Length: 90
Image 1 (cartoon, helix red, strand yellow):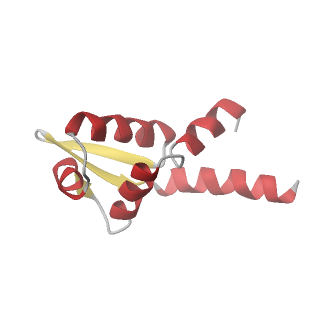
Image 2: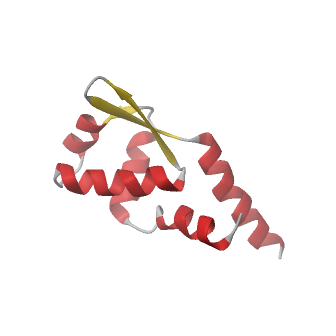
């Protein structure tokens, strides 16, 4: 994993709203509309946060009709964990 990929992954964890979104997704896949109901910001702000989370690989989205359903990506979490383990061993 290069430095740029690592920065993108950890950027996803550097905002309290994204952490709240991740906590909501811990309960399983959620529609963007459901996430929006739980958060206190607008749809464009949710889109911004979801873009960062998806680009990091921590979250994955799947489109169904006009809605996007989001879930935590096990592969993305594994990559973040691998880098933390790498840092710990150095």
